[in-house]
Every structure is written in structure tokens, then in C-alpha cells.
Image (cartoon, rainbow, N blue to C red):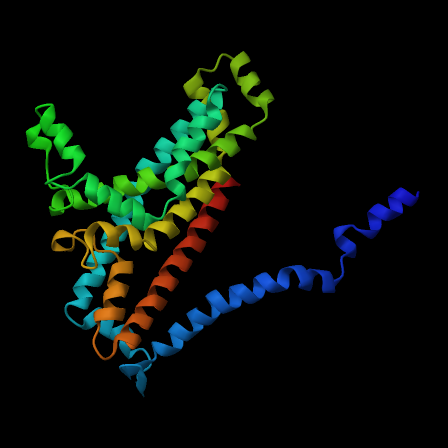
Length: 308
């Protein structure tokens, strides 16, 4: 009886508000200072024109109108948004497909599983700036080892300036990004596959289902929550991309702006935007927040409906 009472005393229903505030308060303060306050500040700054660091006049949505009407920002905005969309679609197709395939293979394998998971996840731990500069050296048309290896085996036609021509810059960027972050989907899919009851797979095998049929009929529906999580995280990461693109193509987004994205456009508005840099960049930051937050919420709700 005493043991039962002790359990009831510390059950979640009996935790006081003071304890909740004590443990969640510091995180809430940090979140408010580092996220909520900057977002609100950017919204307020975007309502004014600026002369350097001094607010000049209240213009309401004038800075937002400028982003869509003033040349060349209006053209760069549409181009950067399109590149973000292509970047997201390409990353989803490559990174998550390969990550799921590797997770399925490692799920069936017991020997060396942890070693391969660690190897595939190591780039995930590196800074995108470091990854970008390393790949820029590897792909250098003059001294890069990748082009040197292609020439050594007689494939001189494939020894291209991969980051120096518009036709290959964005695809290479997508491949490098997928290579770095493939460890995330691998671990999430692996955990989801490990949570599937063995009885379901055994029942499918007894019914004579092939491995392919077993995957699509049993495993894939069971890991749909993981697919939803990875889709939302991939979208947020792809539309907030900056450091990797900056390392590979500079602030102008590579040759002819072929790698230009919203993050780079914001950077140029903030540091090369003239006297009203604060107003224009703040408006750009708010637009990016609305886009990423709104689409992420819509994706999350859509995927939840499909799970149901």
C-alpha cells in the first residue's frame, strides 16, 4: 500500500506548477531571447526605412513591396526561391532514398552495423563550411584530386570545372549536401525499422510475400511517421541553407548565380544593400520565416493525415 501511494505521489498528475516552471523556465527564456525576440525585432525593423543604423521613416509594407518590384532584387528573389525548390526536391530524392536503402540493408545486417552507421553519420557532425571548403578543393579544376583521377584513367572529357559552370554547379551542390546529411535519415529510418514488430514481418513471410512486397506492404506503412519527420526537417534545412552554398560559390551564388538561394540573397541585402540594408534584410528575413514556418506546418499536417 505504501509503495502504491509513493508512486501516486510522484505521478505526472501531481507535479506542481513550480517544478514545471523550474525545469522548463530556463529553456523557455533561452528560446524567447534567441528566437522570439529576433523574429519580433526583424518584423519591426522591416516596417521602417533606415539610414545606416538609424531608423528613418515608417513605411509599413513598403520594404516588402521593394523586394518584389525593385530591380535586380525582384529577379534574384524568384531565381533564389526556384533554386531552393530544386535543392529541396533533389535532396529529398537522393539523400532520403539512399538513406532509406542503407537503413534497410543495415537493419538486415548484424555484423559491423554500428561501424557503418558511424561512418555514414560522421559527415553529419562536421560544419557545412568545412565540408564546403573541402569539396571546393577536391573539385578544383587545376589541382583537385577528383579531376586528376579522371584524367589518370583516360576520362579527360569528364574532368570539368564542376563548380565553375552553371549546368553542373547546382547538381553538385545537391550531391554534396546529400552526402553530408545522409546520416540523419539513416539513423531515423533505422530506428523506425527497429520498432516494427517482428510478428508482422513473420506473418507476411508465412503468407509467401516477397522481400519487395513485404517492404511496401508492411515496413513502409509502419515507418511513415519517420518519413514525415524527415520530410519536414529536410525542407527546413534546404530552405535555410547558407553556409554550404557560401563556401562553394561565394556570396553571389556561383557562376551566373546558378547556386543562389534565399539565404545568400538575405546576406547580400544585409551587408551589400546600401543605406536601407536593415529595412530590406529584415523584410527578407520575415518573408523567409513565414515561408519556412508556413510550409513546414502544412507539410506536417498533410503527412499526419496520410498516416491516419
